[in-house]
Length: 337
Image (cartoon, rainbow, N blue to C red; front, side, top):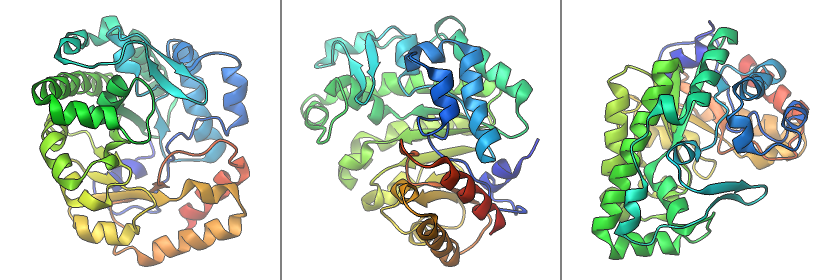
């Protein structure tokens, strides 16, 4: 197996810079559109052979150094029976949003073999096919909590913040239950064979530093403490986290992944040399001419304090409409650096 991605995550020197992309198996790929057809994402996830094909396609087409398990951040919630649907161009919609401590009982323990057997089967299929590492993942507790409370994607997260500020006992109970769910979910992926995991805290950037430290960080730390016991490399990803980067990076993980809002070199200098860093090209750049993409990639590499421990990625997921040729060129160019 090509272990370049894993070696970089562990801070080892590599022959070239490894590359993978969040949402690399998404809507921008014709192969994905063909395989997906008119199927819902939850239907695909529950069809292991199809989910495995979708995860494999960007490895073959783009030449990336890791395959991402094809799943949705809502998968563990679906597994325990939370009523939700994934609406095209909207995102996850919860049928009965959480509003009080009485709702916390709806978060039961996850039994992977019974609740998400399809995901485990997808991992088994991929491990037989892949010659690069398999990346597993989960949403972080705050991000899952925000969907459960808001009921759908939000811009201001007012319901989530109000719940957090005014119902502390319920908030802690919810975050504790979600943390336990996520630990079981990620450990099941690791046991089944994923080689590295990423925890997505996509919406935590709506918080202040003080609120992040008080209401979120203790739960995130616990998750990484459990993952670290397996010796599996781990990545912590967040958006809009520049205001509390040091706190965000204080968990027991190998790599911190940051979005495009903060210069990568500056972020790494703040985090310190003991952790690797991942990122952070603005995905919007790839919608335009590749000459600008090349210039920005050059700027990232020129400013890096070191190469060991660096994984190239975008600052968030690949956008629909991104030219596939740009993604292929980007992979090749980063590999040449």
